[in-house]
Length: 239
Image (cartoon, rainbow, N blue to C red; front, side, top):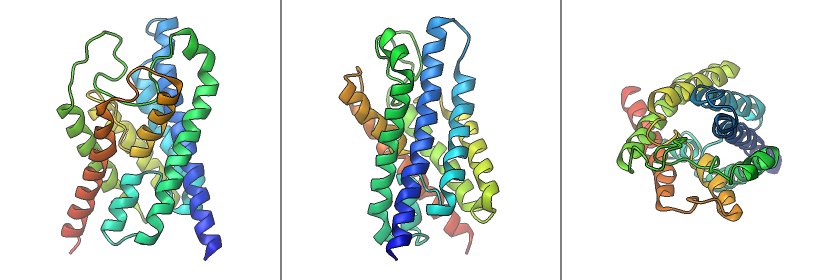
């Protein structure tokens, strides 16, 4: 039993580490490159990079932990009686630890560029994500709706494709990229509290402006709401 628990913890740390490392790295590329060479790199790379980050994380951890890599997924599966509640604290701790380490790895990789550009916030999401103008287009309501619906879409695919073996990683990667293109504009499509809160904590430690603001409630709560809604719909339709 302890071996199974240890594999689950290690798998969630590893998978979330890779997911956040490559997601935050994609954001760093998208933010830094246009400042150095206007128009060289942008939102397409961020959306695709985020999707491919999910692919890598899921492939690396699926055989160890089932590749939740997301507190919203773990909580929704437990609420739907598809995952044991006794393992939820372990998985959540592993996901946040992996997310923090992934963000730290991305910081060290991009440290020189980030410092040269005044430490822009590439770690966490927010209204007007990646905008360079001082004003943001959105407040909280648009991003909250986008996070809820985007995570609803992601969780729906997880539930529908969960028995497809390794190919599920590809479906999830494409889903995240699709959500990025379709719903990422208002707030940056975190879809995952560990993807936002753990890097946000690192950003706060580093003194990044705007890291510790009230917007953190949006990526903390609304992905969970979207995932729970998907499980409820799935169970209702599967009767």
